[in-house]
Amino acid sequence: MPGGDMAKPLLDHQNADSNLSLAPAAGSRTIGILGSGDFARSLSMRLVCSGFKVVVGSRNPKRNISLFPSAVEVTCQADAIKKADIIFVAIFREHYTTLCDHNNELSGKVLVDVSNNAEINHHKESNAEYLASLLPACTVVKGFNVISAWTLQSGPRDGNKQVFICSDNQEAKQAVAEIAHALGFCPVDMGALFLAREIENIPLRLLPAWKIPVFLALGLFLCFYTYNFIRQVLHPYIREKKNKFYKIPVEIVNTTLPCVAYVMLSLVYLPGVLAAIFQLYHCTKYRRFPDWLDQWLQHRKQIGLLSFFCAALHAVYSLCLPMRRSHRYLLLNEVVKQVEKRTDAWVEEEVWRMEMYISFGIMALGLLSLLAITSLPSISNSLNWREFSFIQSTLGFIALVISTFHTLTYGWTRAFDENQYKFYLPPTFTLTLLVPCTIILAKLFFNFPCISQRLQRIRSGWERTRYVKFTLPRASGEFSSGESNSTV
Image 1: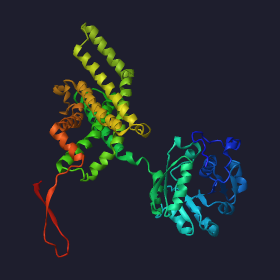
Image 2: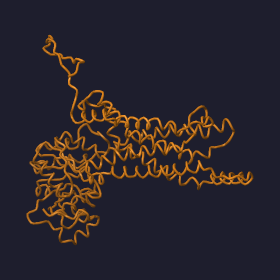
Image 3: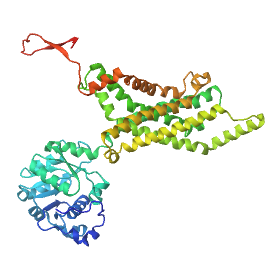
Image 4: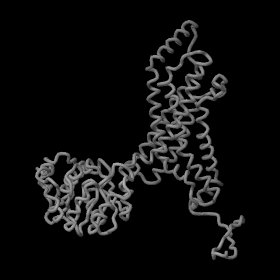
């Protein structure tokens, strides 16, 4: 079958009418569509562009014929059903019962259910199973429900390319998969029809992999923001009667964002350390990780992207600090004090500290940008496994080390200044150093030859074997075994 140019948008079907190359090829397969909504119109246009004959069944064909390209035949539902063996059902679940009037014509046909629900698990059974129960003489295939009308019009390069398909009939699934492939999409066989409920829930989920990382980032932000508010605003207000509430919108936020970014970045590499300890302790890689650790490992990408987001916001806030009116007033006050005292404001140590602090920050943000870019599917798919592992693992760890230097140069000697312990609370940067420094020390520990070689052997399949002793059979006929502590 001839394929259409999937890169060209098809938003204007009038242009499609004037394109003679869209005429169906002789002997091409006829595809039926029941419905005349947005999805049906977009699907018919994409099918015509891919060389299929399309017949649309509508309750009002005369009124809706102008909505479709001239290459599409728009007729009543009964005629459309007779002319096609594969029919896309592009109507709502509430109208499925109207198809029972065409039960005889639909016998033996393949029906592709493209519908979705308004809520997750809104009905006890999926729409596809409900359609199959109404029309037992038909073969129902669930598919194309994760593809939007916009994607059908503009081509899969501007949207999701995967089409999830499930059915109890293998031949019907294969036929629908061939159509999806001809349209430029990637068909994915999900199995039997009872999995249609899971497929129908896919478009309704709102960022399912991001919920835990987002709540984690928000929780860290609230904790650090409250901590900084107590130290920078509440303490001077209570002890010195100074009004520092102007710091709430910008300065405290800018102090909190790097803390969240730094801790989130360390949380990307902490589960890898815990997994290595787990494997070393059990001397095998075939023992399943605890569920919490397994979930943590699966959310590392989202945690890393949120870390980059907070770091980018921190950079923008830092650039905007001199623009504040409060900063200008404080700067003028410092100038007046220096003029009155007639002293040199240049402090060599502070100059070097800020130069190194900014330099480390820029390098850390650059590496985080590289990590974020390579985590995108379009970029990661162009890298082999060694390249991807080098960027995400090696360069990621280097980014964590540089971020640690950035934090240390910010703190400098403040950790040893008793004036920095307000309400006996340590400076914020000292709290953020706990987890990253632990990870860095653990990484150095794993690089010892005796540890790294043993860990490499475990990950290559070696495991510690144990003698197994069997006891006498129980009354129920089962055998019990116990492991001895002696190893081979």
